[in-house]
Length: 82
Image (cartoon, rainbow, N blue to C red; front, side, top):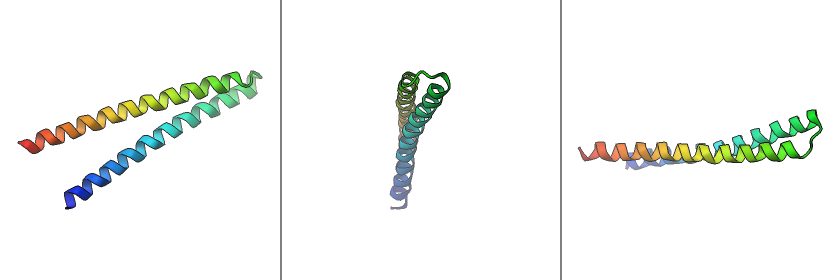
């Protein structure tokens, strides 16, 4: 029972990290584009461009975090079989 609870906590931590990663990278891209547009007077083009970069970076982070978590789970399953 305690092992299941520990696994649940790990999973919730992983999922919250994925969500935070996507939101943070998108917001960073949006804010950077907005301030560059204000500085250079190119509205709305840099905002849209950097928003796109932020979204792509967020999904890249999700891919990396998911791959890392799957490797960790496979390693744990392999170690448990021994």
